[in-house]
Length: 391
Ligand SMILES: Cc1c2[nH]c(c1CCC(=O)O)Cc1[nH]c(c(CCC(=O)O)c1C)Cc1[nH]c(c(CCC(=O)O)c1C)Cc1[nH]c(c(C)c1CCC(=O)O)C2
Image 1 (cartoon, rainbow, N blue to C red):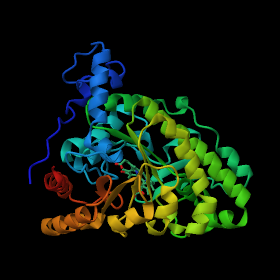
Image 2 (cartoon, rainbow, N blue to C red):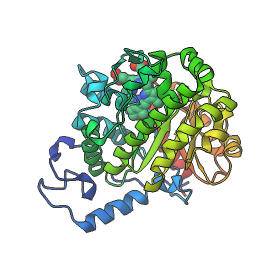
Image 3 (cartoon, rainbow, N blue to C red):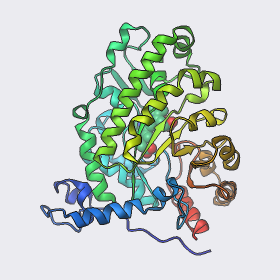
C-alpha cells in the first residue's frame, strides 16, 4: 500500500509572529509572514479551501479521503514532556487563560505526531469558571466545585456566558488557526449532563448519587439546571466557532452512567439544544461519551454529524446503532498503547477492519490519551493508520 501524503506541518517558531492581525485571514505560517503584513482576500480563500479539503473535514462530511484521518482525545497534555515543561508552575485553569501558552500546547501534538486535527487546549469547566463559579482543577483529582449546586437558589451561580467572559479564547483560536495552516482546529465543550455531574457532586464521582437524586426526585429543577448549562455550553462553542474552529466536539463523558430511558427523558433535550444552537454554522458536530454503547442511538439523535464510539462496541455494530448519514469516530482502547508495537498494530487493524463499510471514519482512541502513554507509540500509530489506509 502507498504512503499517505505528508502535510505541511505548522511552524515550530510560535513566538516569532504572534502580533500579526487576525489569524484566520493568513495563509502562511508566522515564520513566512513578516509582522505587519496585511492579509489578503485571496490568502483567506486559499486557506479556507485547504482546511475544508483536509482529510479530517472530508471524513466528517462522509466524502472520499486520501487516508483515514487521525487525532486523539487528550492529545495535548501530560503524555508529552514538552507539555509538562511549558506548564511547569502554572495551574491548569490559569494556563487555559494564556493565549500564547494555549497555542503552544495545542500545537505540540500536531508537530510531534502529525495528527490530522488539533484540539483546542482548554477544559470543560473553563466556561463555568469564566462566569464566576468557584471551582478549581486539582492535579490528579479533576474539577472540584466549592459550593455544589443542589437547590433552586444555587442556580443563581449560573449566569449566561458572553464572548467578553472568554477573550483569551477568541485570541488563542485566532493565533492557532494561522499557525495550523491546512490543519483543522476542533473546538469543544462539556455536555450539560457531564457539567452537571461535577457541579452537583462538587467533584468527580463514581455513582453520581446527588445528581441522580435531583434528576429522579426533582425533574423540574434538573431540567432547569441542564437548560442553563445548555445555553452556557452553546455560547462557549459559538465563541470558538466564530473565532475560527472548524469542528466542535461535545464531551458527555459520563453519560454512560444513565439508562437509555433516563438519558432520553432527562438529558437528550439539553444536548439537542446545544447542537441546534450551532447548526447554522455548518461546522461538523461530534458527540462522544464513555461506556455509551447502550446510548449510541439516542446520543446520535441529538443533531450530530459524527458519533464518537468508545472501545467497547466494534465500529460496524456502532454503525448499526447510529444509523445512516453519520460518520463514526474511534475507537482503539487507550490502554493498547502500553503494549508492544506488534499488539498495537494488530488491535489497530481490528479497528480499521471494522470501519471498512462505514460512510466516514475518523480514527481516534475510545477515550482520552492516558497520562503515562509513551508518546512514540502515538506517533507510530498515526503513521500506521495513514500508511495502511492510503488510497
Ligand atoms: C471529563 C473531562 C474533563 N475535561 C475534559 C473532559 C472530557 C474528556 C474526557 O472524558 O476525558 C476535556 C478536556 N480536558 C483537557 C482537554 C484538552 C484538549 C485535549 O488534548 O484533548 C480536553 C478536551 C485538558 C486537561 N484537563 C485536565 C488536565 C490535566 C491537568 C494537568 O495537566 O495539570 C488536562 C491536560 C484536568 C481534568 N479535567 C477533567 C478531568 C477528569 C481532569 C483530569 C484530572 C487529573 O487526572 O489530573 C474534566
